[in-house]
View 1 (tube, rainbow, N blue to C red):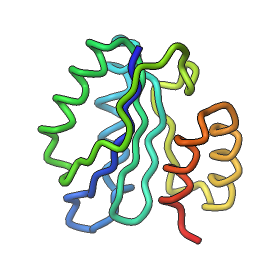
View 2 (cartoon, helix red, strand yellow):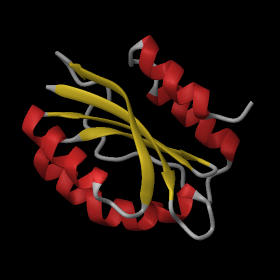
View 3 (cartoon, rainbow, N blue to C red):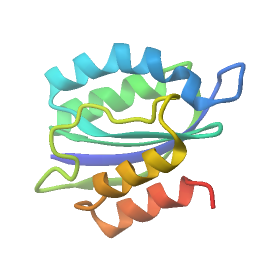
Length: 130
């Protein structure tokens, strides 16, 4: 299996990455489930941070689609490594809904990151506001 963590910036007219989430989830979650992709999608202001993991071919194919996705730009791979076990269990996509308070999401994120590598935790914590 392979894990990739990347960061990118939204191209949304509003400048808010979270505005793209409903469309992303509707399109990606079913496909990710079928292809064995799990991970965590996080947004803060104009930035996306996503960890994806799964079978090598599935992760490669997803990265190719993401590189060509017009909803974001400046995609930068932060981590690209083989993994023995999934860090994100069977989650096909996790994100903060607009109705969820930042504090509630932070609490949920803390639980979700409890079993992942220190490097992954640092990447997600770095994007959060102080």
